[in-house]
Image (cartoon, rainbow over all chains, first blue to last red):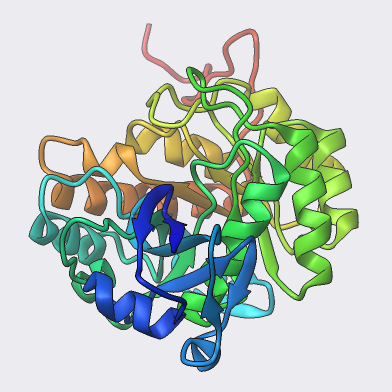
Length: 66
Length: 256
């Protein structure tokens, strides 16, 4: 199953939850936000929201800026 | 002196808001933040890198500071709106510095897209602080849309040129006497900040002027003083400009 995370293609053997995807990619999970196909996935829904084939995810955090 | 700065219903003692970008290291940034007396700092929203585990940048900021996320890197309303929503989700704040850029080289704002994004975000309950070019007509539109303040640029982001159009700023202040005007972008030295405050700005937002100074901590202190001096001067009311001299000492009574 191919999805796009932050513009990069990632492959998973089957559908998984947003929470599982973040765990599998080893990403920081505090003070980050997730968007799936241009809709916000609230943290409370990370375990229940399923990522499927062709989904485009944006996972963001904060960096220095003006 | 009780000259409080009230922005979106919140009271601030400092009229200086600064950024967190471009510092050489975190300790320089923290020292500069402290020296500036700023109570609010901006941060940018960025994709989490997938190839390594990152730490949270926010952990390097003084927890007493209010964090103002920006929509830097967005070139249209849609991206700015999505970025603002992500920032709110991640941080739990309704405040957003709205930045929609129209040109990569000058980083000048796309005022039209900024207004479009502002309208949508305000409907969604955001407190929108829009960065835009110093244009009275656009300022009115942004304020009418519900922005609690407007943030006209002094000069292009990171240019350090100072207020390029002082007349514009003066006109904006005179024509919008009750508006909160925060000069954002283009300040280079403390005198630039003082000038903006003397012209009637309510506050200044800057990043590069401090981060790229030889000694950011010292420059931050200087900026703090400049903003205070400029504000005090504005309230004090300046003397008139004259084409010709007006003697300060008595003309009569000098020895001959």
